[in-house]
Image (cartoon, rainbow, N blue to C red; front, side, top):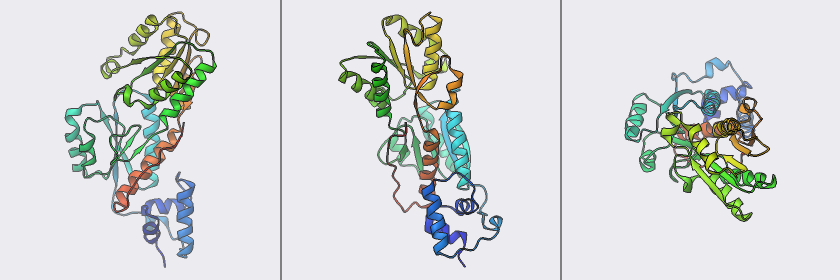
Length: 318
């Protein structure tokens, strides 16, 4: 008689994940569910108590490394990843990072010592090659460190273009771009898409960058205020994160500049936070749940099927 382990081996996922799928639990993709059910049917699998079939090897941990800044977005993303990790039989350990490049090796050494199975990395690193050389499987979220490490991210370039075309369609003539992206404007695909679309419309963009020190020292609003005072004739703004967009709304209103009458603002992020902005923020919507699901799925495949090459196809999920 076929066992859950037989189905797991054929499907390339864990016994815990197969058990939850066959018991109609979890939040797996329809493709994964169909694959497992088809294999079970072909093997003439007869269900027994799920408790007997669950993985008995003890707790399996994966780590999620994200900045320690107080940002609601990371809370939403990590909560979603925790749920998907549990579906595959893993527990998620959240690790904070302050972009301390000198401690990268120490971080990975400590995670290896703790028997972590793999890492979901959402914090910028200095040396992509050193990450690729780690013995632990790594999946980056939101940015790509090199071609050897799988990454899960939205189509940021298209998101920037959409924001530019929307603001131009609203009659904006002078446009600003506000970013906290740590890897520079040349690698910021939201900025590149925004700039390219504006150039096609015969318009120029004026970018402003929030540095890590400014984030940590709570001086984001000072930068936005300077930006507003230096460009009093600007009438459109794309902020590459939802937090920066909401901070911008507050600054412009405090300066007596009406939003959206005199300044139109577009942000980028998860719609869960929209009720907390006033007026309600126009948003390039990100499918955060799909990002979390894909990231966990790719990492689990790397852990459990290391002999199979893993890749992720980047499509538009904004």
